[in-house]
Image 1 (cartoon, one colour):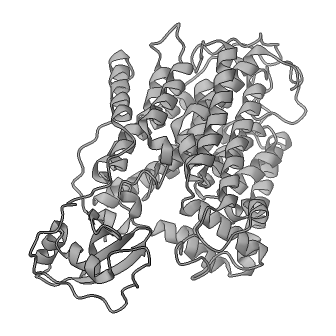
Image 2: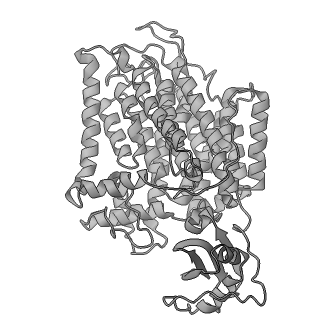
Image 3: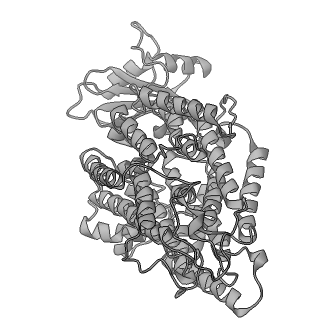
Length: 612
């Protein structure tokens, strides 16, 4: 059953210009200053129960025992919760009949009220003082992440004293101070404007937060399509030596001194590690990775009913590559059998994050000084810019730009602070770009990414086509060889990852627990789950699928920046169709988007028709 909600109208303004730039900056500053650090999580009605309330809900026979550190018994907690206004309203709506269930959480009782076997109210009662901490109705009753607790995701990062300075560094350090009114600066502000939605999420207002993340996604989709499909002049003939590339006149072009940018990168890297160690938490995603790794090392299945513990029963919803990636960390920090500090998940998250950072540095150095070597060139093609170890200012500048953007952007830190697996997906995509010129490598890495979380499957047609759209290929051996190599590597990587679930418990169970369960998932964290928009949802899915196929065909010639933009547009289009969306998913398209924004077309002037 869908969760009804009256959603405010949302309209994305996409036309660039100074007025829009200032408007979005103002919105972002208001949200950040007001705070991603929310007030105490209150959905509705946290008043104390009315004295003399006569309504009495029967105490369930399976009520938990009173913990030794609690002053309030189960029955006393139930009587206190009975007087909550939300409970009284639900009782009146149900004709005077409600049943209750009690659970014990650290420091509090959770009292759930049911009408016709549907939980309609959840009341949290302090186990020592008896104070009603929170009272929830609607989506927050079922979804803990809708209750506005900053400690669930991000932790100290939600403080405006942390979030706002990081956002300021991200924007002002990447700014071209000589030409401040540029569309790429609007792009940076739009990336930060997810904070407007996030502020309402932290305040437990998902009816407002959910519609507000669609305008940034739609804007970024439009920008990536424009970059990917617009025509660019080819300024040097094939075989002609191009001049050294200047800093990008169209993309990101930070004008702060290089020493300042490098110093910022070092400070931010140390800061991210410090707050992760000092104040971060492991969400269910990271917990699932550790449990799955433990199952693999014990030669047990990683999919099936009852395979994962009761406090994370749907932890087997990810691809097998996700669980294999956690194996070395689980071996170093073995799982205790409980959802505790989970050092393995924390170590894995730090490793994934720095793998992304290192990959962006390598990618920036290669792209910044690549000369006439093209995005999908054959191994062994000449690289007039020199060997990788040779320093060149353009390649250093692009490498530092990409590294700074990753380190300063708050939502990459948000992933790290949540110790989730989303940076693993980002790392695989980044390294697939680093090794894009090698069909075997890019096919294998994309296959692993698709077997981690299934969204990158939509990139398969784009990666198959490479630098030339399939409409521009000729049926000759030199054109077909990279396609066959890529396809073989992609299929082999997927087959290797699927071998474990194929043996036990079987592909049918694997499908049901992963793609099948996700396809049938209902969630209030999208407009599709908050309103009846089935026709529009179906059309958006068809449009995303059509785009994924179209980028394999057109344009016929694309440089590396356009390739990255087309990839980002496909990933964003898929996220727009998601039944369940969250801020962690921004890093799925962020590396592709950053490359598209930072790319200098002058570094790739002579694509060869023979390359894919």
